[in-house]
Amino acid sequence: MRRALFISLALLGASTAAAQTSPTEVLAPNQTLLEVRSTGQSYVAPDQATLTGGVVTFATTSREAADSNARAMAQVVAALKKAGVAPRDIQTQSVSLDPQSNYDRQGAEPPRITGYQARNAVTVRVRDVTKASELLTVLFEAGANDVNGPFFSIEDDSAAVAKARADAVSKAKAEADAYATAFGMRVVKVLRISERQRSATYESIVVTGSRIRPAGAPPPPPPSMSSPAVEVGEMEQKVTIWVDFALGPK
Image (cartoon, rainbow, N blue to C red):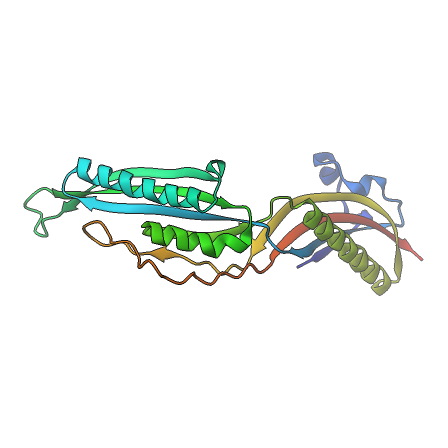
């Protein structure tokens, strides 16, 4: 999405020039300022992914909930390491222990604690995206019952950014030429270029797993479960630039 704005030199007030440094200060009397915003894109396959795997357990006492959760989570982490995930790629995301309460619908009695819920989750960095599906299965089979991902990313996006930037510049120049031609003018020179935002988006196929039960420790998945389908796809890198052109008579 792009927009263009013409500003005639004759219409610029002295207050505008005083308020900010403007490219119009270097315009010749017979020149017009054209401001163009252009967004360039590039596409690249992600080369790494992130998974989150956790365990949620319930018990009557806080100690029981915490102990059972710690044992289950230790099993999950051990399974990840056995599958080849390096310790530096496993990071604790969150640990929590919360009371579960029963509320009196009439409001006559205060909430009564009926048990405790313990949560523990880790973030797993997957350096080979082709193993994302395999590691999801590892999490499921190890007893993780709160699983999300994969969330794909690019380790080094410099090449993708450079390509998107070149695309944005090419579009800006083409738009400036088109406006100049339409008004019987020509592009004299570039006055200013600025880049204010960039972003990477991914139309992901996210595989999530959640088998949390309202009470009691959930049973582990069947030992022969199938691996979930994971498609890597492509990520879109966007770069937006603003370019001020000086247009003059032919």
